[in-house]
Image (tube, rainbow, N blue to C red):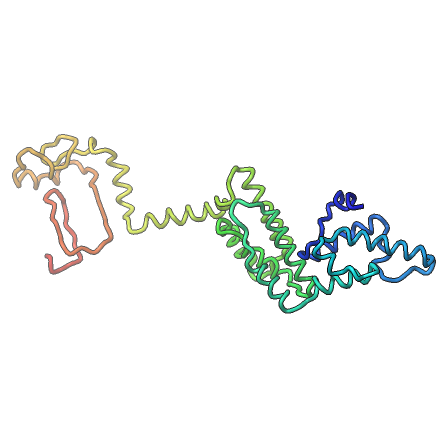
Length: 299
């Protein structure tokens, strides 16, 4: 019989997770059509001897599924119903201590990076089922919110997207569970790790980073860069040769008259640089056409 219990996947009850063990042993007994003793009363059409034998058989099956430490606490119980009642009183009693312990387990539950979502959901459901057995029930939306909060930081993008899309409507636990499982499948298919972040998270941050990096820069700076390209395309206003600016020219400076006549030449692109910053000094460049400053005291 012990081998049959093991084959059914029923682990010996060691004092932890009574609700799960109880569910397993009840399913096993119903599957074998040995469940009547669980109800506690003999059917009218059954003989007394037959009932006593059946009750004793089921009592033995349950005892075989208990660890030695637990079994010693219920050796005096002589019927299936009394045995289950005693176990329930010891391990399923809704005491304040037990409730606090389970609540701490639930709120401290956090999914570790690169671990299975399925395993995390199993742990989550185990604790909520244990809380249910001690008469603590959560609203469906509360369960969904607690599950979202238990996800690691790499899931922040999905968590934010779900919260924003919900608006004023209530979240549903089944919907959140399905979204999390689908996201894990997407990451596996794309070869991402759990700590990579969701696609939504990556795209959103990328756009925000681009916008932030362009602040304080004049658009003309980018236009000038595309027009001039390399310095080889720049022509010196002093000597007329390409490859350098007039301020770097080694040739003698043109007379003032020639400089004045520069306005009659063909219009060329000018390099414009705008920098948004506060400075206390003003350095003039003799090669510049105009000088601008917001400080009147420097004029």
